Image: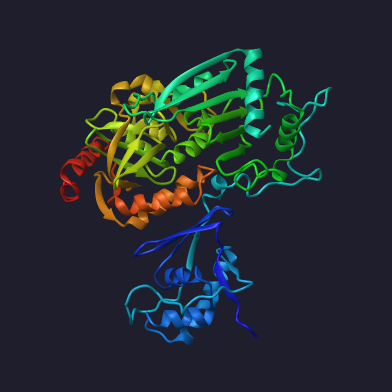
Length: 153
Length: 356
């Protein structure tokens, strides 16, 4: 079976990679995220489109772990990213060179990648992330006056 | 006829019936002319910093402000659109209120359903619209920071970025104070009112980058305090609360320019970003922190308050966070120490302030 290829879910997802942390925001879920170490490196590689084996291979050149061990750790990580809608499956792959993490570091201790998600600003980001829908649907039409004019119009 | 022309005509119809008034003020040196149909909303400009005009010629913005309480538009297309959009909101707007069928490059349009306000900005003609669906009173947070989505869109096009931050300093340099609600931004800024530091803003201000240097510009001359504990820390503010009969859970709001005109400053060069953290200890001090921490405090919070914010805002805030030194401001209970620590940071540098 062909490996699934993933990409960062742009343009809804914006991210910035600092030396010590990658910060991402999903504009349509109102959630922001922190990624460190191998998670940040993997996310940057995903911007170029990648399968799990491709990610593992690239990460194994920087981190002190084999591609197999990294690959196993990436499965949960990819699932987390999908759950947060930070990545999407690529339908048609684009041509690109081999994946490479910027820099020359090697032998960096490997910590299984994970993503921290912060949802507390959703209520400010979005108009109404959770709303009650009654039998009449929502939003309900405002009462019209005798001329059919709704309040305010 | 395009959407801007339809709104323009609707405003003219309202102004013809209800009367026309206007007020011109300067924000960050840019002349902004607020035009009102009727007199219901003309006090909204009270919250804005009335700054000096710029010596250099700068483009101006004209903002039309009116409501739909008295009459619908004569144009049936606009009338039908406003009827449908305000009643079946989620068929017409994106998740952040964008008017999906109306927005085009150079024309920002969005609807904020709580207060029922349609904002539109035509960046080509520098004309903006603020139409409120009805005449119901605005919630206090709209009164103390009015026209925010509209001004954000227009000033972004002029190279000035809105930031969700308080700011204090002197003409030689100042500091941004950022963080989520309740982190201590307002308390820190208010603690500087009777000090040698001047007050630029409590909640939102604007930042401009020129030749690699960043400057902050004032926007709103208002402040908010969370609850009775906050008010108790600033007894000199107790008699100055604007919404004394506020509902439970609402913050106390202040129009500071009315009470402390000499404490205001309209711009200063930026020297750093502070992240206030309430410690419960007596003393206040600063500790260096990473640019990524400053960005995490600044960007999500800023963008969550600005429905038109997008990749440009994110990038600007990233560059700002990388360019300026960032510090945790560990806030102590002795309020009098706070402006002294900030003053030391500005005048002596971090090491001196950290060892005080």
